[in-house]
Image (cartoon, rainbow over all chains, first blue to last red):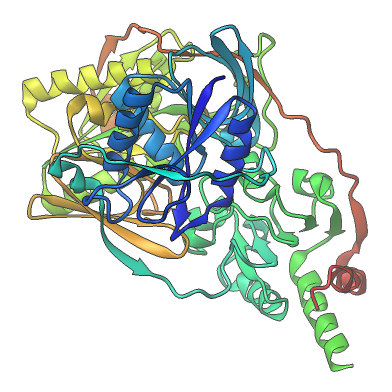
Length: 306
Length: 254
């Protein structure tokens, strides 16, 4: 049976959903062994070292590479997250092995893997062949539903780490206040070029406030300096998956679409009935967005008063 | 201060990506090309660091001969030197790309001195392998951190900020170092007319690159199956407001 090491991310023992998905994905490829870093015993391999007091990509990867060298598994997986991709890239560089990032499917073919992975943030797929003694991959988020995983007793693995590896550990951590953020908001009211100006976003702010949501925007808007980049939804901005995504004056370029395609419902407000955002949306209102938004805000207010 | 930025030439797709008939590439006949967005910001950040600390910015890419266009763009906004590793335009895997870049960087450093800071994009817009920068860093023996949205250099260290959603992490790397940056670290400037003229005349140091393929071979590209949605038109103009608010109620948002 193929041994599959899965590096999981956790916060004081609370395992990231993407890591649970990677465990489930790994279960389809062989016998899964959990690998975690830190004081919390989660079962499987527990990497412990005095140097590892916070996230430290180089040191964690060095630990993983040593574990791989000692155990020689057939596969090492992680979730396709910022940290998962980063740690696995270091592991791949240390072991001089190929790495397939954001894999959606694996079809073993003899000693090699035929696999599918995402490109362009998910708007394109690539079929590739991975040939390596130890196969390294990260699992694209949300391609598989996480199943329960039977965690077993933990075995401590103590790597040998040079002091120098602390150079890339988190030096300082500033916790942000938890308000309604783009990623947690149940409604995102998002504006594009069609909003016309920074001031034009006032009515989007108002509607978002009424619905307990957050304001987002497209890349054109941040490039114009109308909104901060932290509001940008898209491939190079934030990925959102709200209950309702309201796209106001957004044409629906790929770069934007991949950032909000996981939304449960999409409402497009656009004066162009042929805009890709309109044709891909669940609901649409056609026309000039400002009078429409003003009317929606007034209607919400009227119903709340009545 | 010697600064280097590695960039990638990528197509700028609109609302749909079409593939070539052999499914080996994006059909770019009707597309323009650009620098991958994270890297456009990396170029801007390097120029800002030069403006603060002095020195020079070199921009480097591995790609087809046409990638000269992207290097000249970087020069037009303030880069000083440009180096192109010319390929035949085929898809290079990350191991081969990193090896060629690292070898060319080592050559440049042997000739003119070590780069204090090398900036790369967090991931390329097209292939998104998340690893070329890290592999280059390991070959050159430099520390690297990714996901960076803020940079400052002082006292022989680069301090780099990364957002995690609930926190901001600060890293402090001794120079020489590498960082992989993300869009949002800055708002890139547009080229000026003198910049464009300078870019036109700039010398691009071209050298052929030959691949030693790695273990991940791309076979073909495909478009994901589109989930066909039928769009319900709630109405036209402000008269649609009651229907929209009905939808809010249906979704339990009021």
